[in-house]
Image (cartoon, rainbow, N blue to C red; front, side):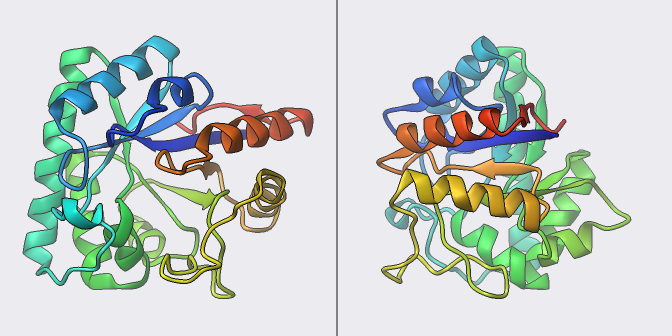
Length: 231
């Protein structure tokens, strides 16, 4: 069975190059919540070097809170926000010589779109307009609204805990994060076997990202999974 291993990169964190050598897909920041054109271009170049598939990682224009504060925008504003960011990254990707393969919203935009049609609808519209599949939680509103319109890839997080309804535990709670790499391995297995995810994420800004990715990657290979990008 194939499984994709992804990480959010191009956000100005220190381990991008090392992580790029271990993953199969990279969600590159479009510069609104973190990073800039230079960090994005560098991440794209590293992806080209290691044969990693790349996707756009648009977020709220809220650098102070790293795009993780929920904001109320109109559907028109959300559509414009996403198309603008994805278009900019697509241009940089063309400059580097790599194709853009998917879209994964960032932070609060991701979480709000997973549960609320007001945010999911414009993001699906942007994905259809640009001809790119979406990467997000299985069972989310993004998945439901993508049906019959555009591609969708189910994603799970090895370093975040889940609520009973399948949503992520809010970051404000002390139990939001998986701290032990071995727990991350167990959760990765549960996500693949029980939740049907095709792509596993470890956040690039996780202080333990390198350890987590190495341990999760080794466990997946040991269990017979083939690490391969989903597109």
